[in-house]
Image 1 (cartoon, one colour):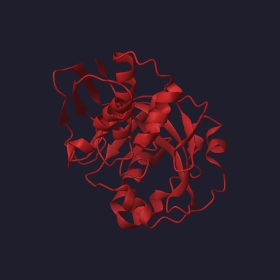
Image 2 (cartoon, rainbow, N blue to C red):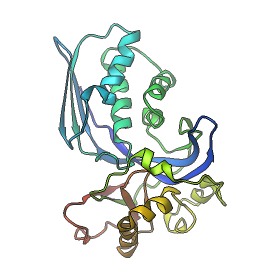
Image 3 (cartoon, one colour):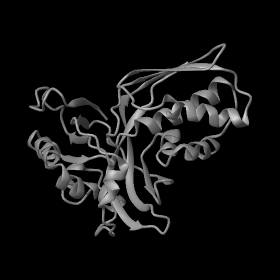
Length: 270
């Protein structure tokens, strides 16, 4: 069985409050985008997990594909599988690739072994993997709040617009992103800004609070955002707490963008 775990972008990201447990409350809108990893799972005599594509440092046992399998195996008598994950979504980019891989694993195992788990049950399992994971169970636009685990479907349709993604050779960990963030309540709530469904009206109003902090430490990243606007983006932003940026365009952007060859870039229709 093969599936294609997709990425997401954050349309706005406000850090609204520092919590007593040391974490932060956030507000954001997650939107699925058609940049995909490739995940294959088949029956096998013994469990195995292979990786290709973007290299993932560290112990493979920490990968959310394996964690998702082990999570279901605790509650169901799953047989051994051979899993192969090909990474097209870059790491530490704020695109949710790892979370998507984990949630798609849950969905695939549910279908493959006819566990008949509802989406709400799969959502609970996904929440055990990470705060972004439940989004990919439903894979539709959603407002998220709390630590990111509170999710509400949101009516937003960007079909027909074009997306350009660019990730420089800079990696930003979530810990680094939160280190100097100052929580604040936004002047206008994200769903109010997005309600017009017109990206050209979002610039200057729809903000990612991480940008100010990260641009201070990595000033070259602010130039990427400026470049996307110079190419004709209706709206441009950093996504999540990573170092990837996106521009939303009315028409496909020119292929020759002027970004360095060492940068990852991808474009497609939403």
